[in-house]
Image (spheres, rainbow, N blue to C red):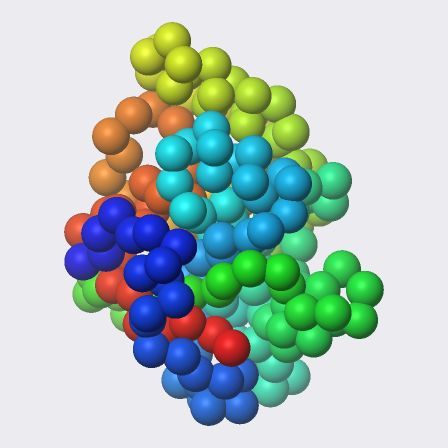
Length: 196
């Protein structure tokens, strides 16, 4: 089970290079990001957490590629090669600026269910990012209001939550909104290692 973690503690997690861990990654594994970008820091501030982003691993056996299914600001729901995060994030010829941690959902989920979760996420490809949900979460935290608005836009954690909820493996939410930290703190999630 994951616990509240600091940036310092993230730095103490076991490290694996992409080459070392690539074969270990499975569809349904989670990628948590603690970014150093302005928007990442804003999310961390609003949610009182080190996490600014979460995505889900999709391992394509035909293409022999590892992707992250995610909802990205200004882009929306997309598949991005994990290798791009580590070497050419956003086409800038630099790796992602921040820490990335791989975690596993420990619930008994067979491969068919995980494929259905990814398929659900694939059906949501190109749905827009919910830019206003971050503001709504901030207001809910500030005024202690719990109400999740369900629309066809996603922030990263809503996409991951909905993929798992679709297959009957919901994450426990202390509030009506879902942020990366809410998924991280769920009893089913176990951190594995940090990606170098």
